Length: 317
Image 1 (spheres, rainbow, N blue to C red):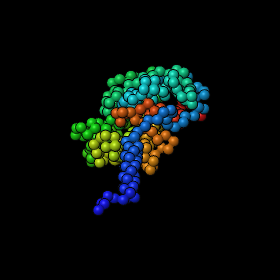
Image 2 (image 1 turned 135 degrees about the vertical axis):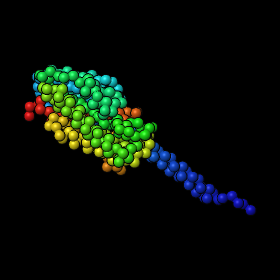
Image 3 (image 1 turned 90 degrees about the vertical axis):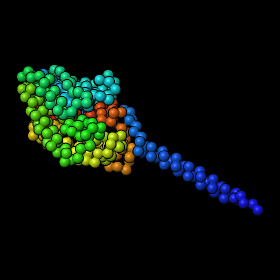
Image 4 (image 1 turned 45 degrees about the vertical axis):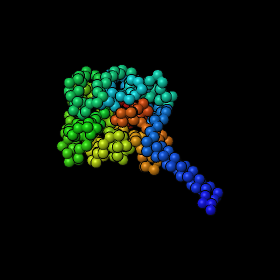
């Protein structure tokens, strides 16, 4: 008696196996593409910058551009020193994009000097110490433009490797963090007051808020860090402090780095999320997660420039 399956049954089984293999492969590729793939893309990144404001001199005063803060202002992750956001705000690099040629402070402020006191890996207490100890009293005829990032390392350090503490609160509960957040508010106020006091000729302070490498999802494992239940809540409080303290000063302005980077973190390929950026669905973070990559720095210099153009008193309206 013949117990072998008939030819149609064998074909049906083969078809089912092939179909299952294709579906599994498609699922693996889909999961890889939308869960783990983080292409960085190429070319310009970030919002456009209008040329018109850079077509004429803003001021012939002596201007001192000062960088303060952490590795974002220090430029870790940029492909060269000329590609740091701090550098590109001041001067176009040799390989500048055509649309950005001439869109920099040196084009409109001919008597400009620069100094970058930012320190990679530093937390907000260090920033206060640097301002107190290293920022010299400026001449009466010098006007300051201060470019600043502070607070991000307070949140991400020490990556869950040690118990949370002030200025290294990763893994903390919101209740634990509340007094540290209050201290950050006091510290930031003191920083601004001290900076303003060191520029008797006047100054403007441009401080970026803190971006989120998880694109607002709060799933720390997507950036290879331990789960942090209250991470988004604490992050939101820190950004609220930056905005609240800035509003207490007429010459302090918040640069919207958080909003600019949404859709360019660990979920940059997930088209179903509200943060998805169809025109540039690429990753703007460096390999260490916490700093921008080269395209990220391009985007940051653009939002700094746009914020300066919108707010500076140096430019005639």
